[in-house]
Amino acid sequence: MGSGRTAAGAVRHQRTLTDANRETPGLITAQGRRVALIDCKSRMTSRATQRHAVERAAVNAHLQLVAWTLLPVYYVFDNLDVLTPYDVLMTGRGGPRTPAGSGSPYFLVPSNRSLSFDDTFGGVEPHHGVSTAA
Image (cartoon, rainbow, N blue to C red; front, top):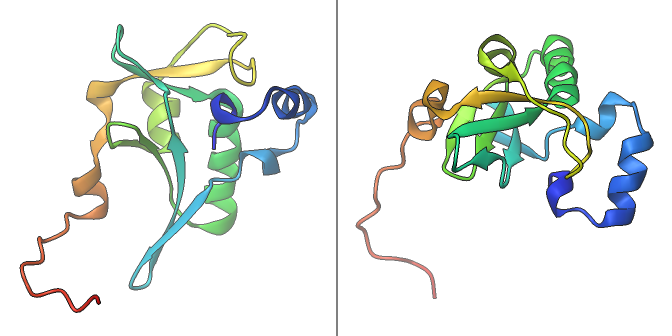
């Protein structure tokens, strides 16, 4: 969960933290031997500008996490666009500080620079068999 969905008291406390551990992605996914970390970005895309926002501190922490664990980190947005911390670092522009959320600066990335969810994680073939669920 991003700080946009966190209680006000918890957000105030988060603003005092500088530890990269608070930026740990919320999901781990695995397919066969392939493991990845996913940070869901709820309500982090502007409809007006068609740009995704990612907190700079998260990008910095996730680049370090990738280097340390050798596991890929992906940001998945509400519309299922996908970016990596490296994508954000290389294609993002510095955005203004905002009083919403954690209050820290953000990178803004045009949504047309995103990867598609299916191309990144693979599509799912529809199952047309009879369900075995009771």
